[in-house]
Length: 386
Ligand SMILES: *Cc1c(COP(=O)(O)O)cnc(C)c1O
Figure 1 (cartoon, rainbow, N blue to C red):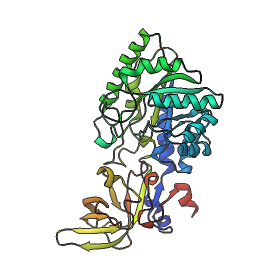
Figure 2: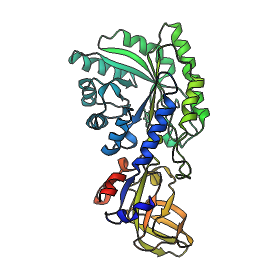
Figure 3: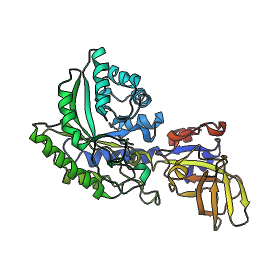
Figure 4: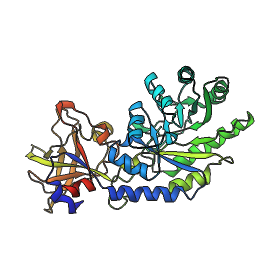
C-alpha cells in the first residue's frame, strides 16, 4: 500500500482502497483448499461488500453468490454471477424479492419459517414455477464471537427450530410449487475457533441421522459462513486459514453419498484486502488526552461504533516516534470513535491514515448521515490508472 501513497494523494479522502492482488491471492487459496474435498462449493456472501469491481473478480474466480436481499440478487446478477450459483437467505423476504428470485430461477431459497414457505409456494404457483427451497435450521450452536454477530442460538431470530425440521420438510413435500433441496445453517461471524464449526458438524450429523429415519436425504447441506480474520495482524496474516476451515468440515461432517456441501464466506474473502483511507484534519490536545480528528467518520466505517470492533490504524505519511491518540471522526455522535489510545506515528494535519481490515462490512454499511457523500472504492488498478 505504501507504494501507492503518491496516488492516494490525488483523490479526495475518505475512500476505500482495495488491494486486488491480495483479493486474488485469497480467492486462489479458497479454491485450492476447497477443491481438495469432493463436493465442496463456495459462495461469496455479497452482504460483506457489494462493490461491483470486487464482485466481478470474485465471480471470475468461480464462486457462487449468497444473497440476503433482492438488491443483492440484482447486484450479483449484474456482476455476472449465474443464477444457478445464487442462493437467497433472509428472515424477512418480501414478495417482490421472492418474485425476483423466481424470475431469475436462482439455485435455492433458504427458507426461515413455515409462513415464508407458504408465500413462496403461492408466488411460485402464480408463475407456474417450482421454487427450490432449503430450510435454514437453527442448530442452537453458540459461536464464541461478539453477541451481536452470533446467529445460531435458540434465542436468535434466525431459522427454524430443530424440532420442527421434519415437519416442515414433510409439509413442503405436500406443496406442488416448492421442492425441498437441502438444509442451511449459519452460526455467526468472525469465528476463529474451529471448535465452533466442529460443534456445527456434530449437530448436522445428528440431524442427518434423524432425517434418515424418515428416509430423507437432502441433496445439499449449506453450512453458511463465519470464518474470521486477524484484525490485529493484517500484514502478518493477510489470508485466513482456509485449510483448517475446510479440513474441519471434511473431517467432522459426515456427508451422505452425492451430497454437496455449500459454504457462504463473506468476511474471510474480502476483509483484509480493504482499507479505509482518511486524512488527519486536526490534532487537538484535550485536558486529559490527545485527539486525532480525521475526515472519515462512522458514516464511512460503522463497525467500531456498532460492535466496538477493532481496526488497526496506521499513519501512512509519518515515521515520527509513536504517540497515543484517540482517533475520532467528524460526525455529531459521541460514538464516532475509531479507537482510543491508539499508538500512531506522530500525526499532523494532512497525513494519510489507514484503517486496516476494512474490506468487509465497511463500504457496504456506509450511510449519508450528516448529508455526507458515500465513500468511493478504488481498486489497485484504479489507483495505478490515475
Ligand atoms: C452474513 C452471512 C454470511 C457471511 O458471514 P461471514 O461472517 O461474513 O462469512 C453467510 N451466510 C449467511 C446466511 C449470512 O447471513
